[in-house]
Image (cartoon, rainbow, N blue to C red; front, side, top):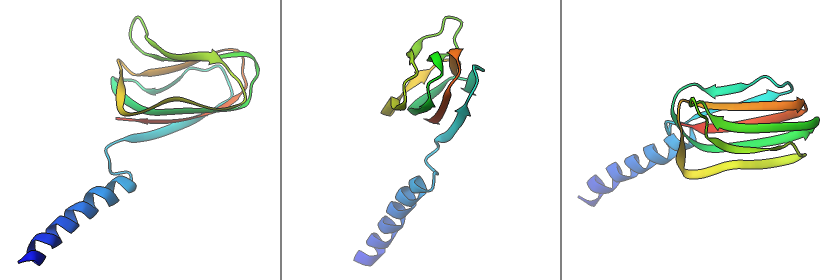
Length: 120
């Protein structure tokens, strides 16, 4: 009788945990390699954002990077002048709502940055 209970519980546990390891957690992962001042819009509709990481490998000149919502009056999540290294802009287990999507804008002389994003 114990086996009849343990086996389904073990199968359910494996499905949940192995599924999340394989990306079956319902989240979308994306990113970009940015070398210009062209706006990056990874999401064009309201979403919950969990992780946003930026790695700058070349700073450009006065290269200002801004992460904001796509609302008519955008809310700014982060803004700063590019500096070499990795910046964890957001790491949240519960996520934050980015109304109408996400825009990452750039001004100044472009450098090189890589972005990594997880959202749902």
